[in-house]
Amino acid sequence: MKKILMAKKFFILELFIMLLLTTFVLYTPKAVDSKVETKFSAVRAQAHIKEISKEPHSYYDQAELANVRSYIIDTLNTNLGASNVSEVRYEKEFVKQELNELVPYDIVNVLGKLPGKSDKGILLVAHYDSRDHVGRYGELGRSYGAMDDGYGVSSMLELSYILKDLNPENSIYFLFTDAEEVGLYGAKLAATDNTLMDNVRFVINLESRGRYGPSYMFETSKNNHKVIDLYKKAKLPVTYSMATAVYSVMPNFTDFSPFIDQGLPGINFATLAGLDNYHSPLDSYENINISSIQHMGVQVEPVVREFTSNSKYVEDNYFVSNSDQVFFTIFAGVLISYSNTVAIVLLIVAIIFTILLFTVLALDKGFSINIVKSTLPKGLLLSLTLIISGYIFSNIIAFIGKVPFNITYTRVLSSLSDIPSLIFLVVIVLIYTVYISKSKLNDILTIGITLNLLLTLITTIFLPGASFLFLTATMFGIIGISMDKISNKITKKAILLFSILFQLLIIIPLLYSFYHALTIGGIMVLVILIVINGLVTIPLVLKNLNLGGENERK
Image 1: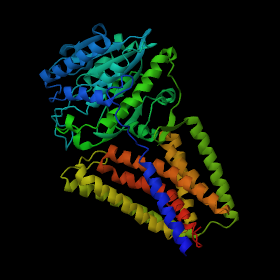
Image 2 (image 1 turned 60 degrees about the vertical axis):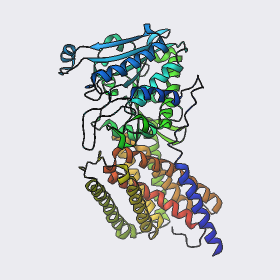
Image 3 (image 1 turned 90 degrees about the horizontal axis):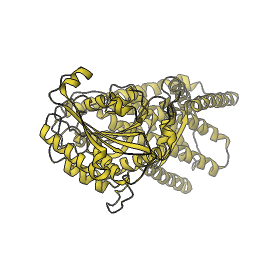
């Protein structure tokens, strides 16, 4: 008995360590000191934010906006030379003619260029106007633009500084757009400006919706196979093709949108965590997170350096591809990616292994009629109850916060939502774990494998970027049942521990990311993901926990 208790206590320690490791997946680096001239420094970048965020500078605050524009131009003149910096003004009449939009003021972009041996090159984009008006419930307007889009503007100014002596093969264009907050006007006009667009071969947009946390690469152009190959050069990449796939079917737009609508390849970055500051006076210099800025810079800088180093990237049709990639961050600095073709192959492999496993189980009489008569109906009822409770919980928090509920955007103060949401989700996991612990673990795994395989099939066909979440659960579920054939406990434990760790390194950062992306309104979505993934991960945990005992549930 003492040995059993020790084994279980040791596994609880192992589980705690694994949970701790999941926090490093979304790691953001310490800011590089300003004295380091050759590396991106968020310390230098924050000095720019201090200057541009002294006053709200929306499109309607023309005097303040002009001051910010002047600061950007002066900084670029110093870094790139005045002959490589221009103010691109689109008069109101031209905007009406080009975009069929009536605007009260001219739209004025700022364009800088670091000339390469070729005029063709990469375009970096960030908007320099802040938010004035209230667009959605819970927003306060009158933003100082320190984060949105001070993070992007300061990062580009810092990049112009550290790259100024690069002498690149391909040119670098720095575009600071006007009037993003009122209709993406600066970006739309630039995207139809043939003088610029004829030389652009790749676009990187830098945005910020939040205050802290990682800078996610959350959107790509279509058929992104070669785009992702370039993004792999990034340091500490944080991205999930599941997020980019979901974002692609949502009605959201940034300055990135007009450029990909023109067929240009590219990637889009943004921070997400810290919605309290978004489009409000709290978007100020005092509240910035320097580590998030550093993370944006360390991802973008290597990509830009790689692009400018090789003339192949500006060749016509270099980025043309017929497929996307599936990709996800598994640990700090570790990005796993593979083509849609490989995804189909992996699906076929998963189907074959599932058939083989179920055949063996049938021959060994490992299937129980109890799965259909009891386990599945009870599981469906519990799952439905938990999912509905997630919907009710979000509505309660929205009601307490006195804001309207929306599944993709319910803006409640983090002090009211974050801790209650964490407690709620932990309770959901515990309830689910208690249910699973009272069932035959292999019965639960059988259900989990079947459901995740079905979802792998559906997503591989219709939303390939999301398929990895269900594919990995399917494969590790198969491994979980197969471990019953291994008699060596050390081997079995090692394989189960690896399976659990891999699953946790995927699901926990994803839950965190989706929570900040969807806000409190998306709790129901998180519960759905917990239910689906939990059908595999929780039995794996319980199997490992039972290894020290004599009554292991199979």
